[in-house]
Length: 173
Image 1 (cartoon, rainbow, N blue to C red):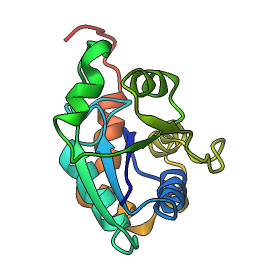
Image 2: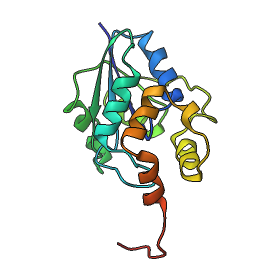
Image 3: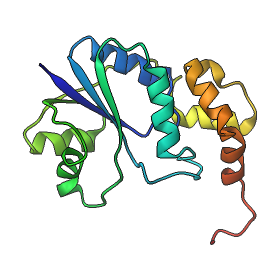
């Protein structure tokens, strides 16, 4: 049995993530999905809470044909121990999928098999572009699975994102 690990911030989860996870699911028996920067929320680049992201992914992957786990993973600002931090919060896994150079380097140094994730229309499906569209009042719903739209509406996520992205001219809190 092969269990893989895939991590992302999922701010928000979109069709690019969905395509990558669906493809990974064709190659492995189980998948551990790590929600990176789980401690972050209510920020312009990280508007959604870990719980909201768990719900988004759980609902979007309802029909994934393999067993999967969706687990929040907080940041550790000490790269040399980050892999061990991940391992302590997840079921064991044998292979890591990522395109992030730092993630690839850290897991390779820890002797994991690392495969580069297949990218899917990266120029179109990015959290940055989806958040930009939300803030600007442009259409974004077609870039994410329907359960994600529902979860964002349930949490009034677009309003939150607009509010936390606004500036009052004072850069300090």
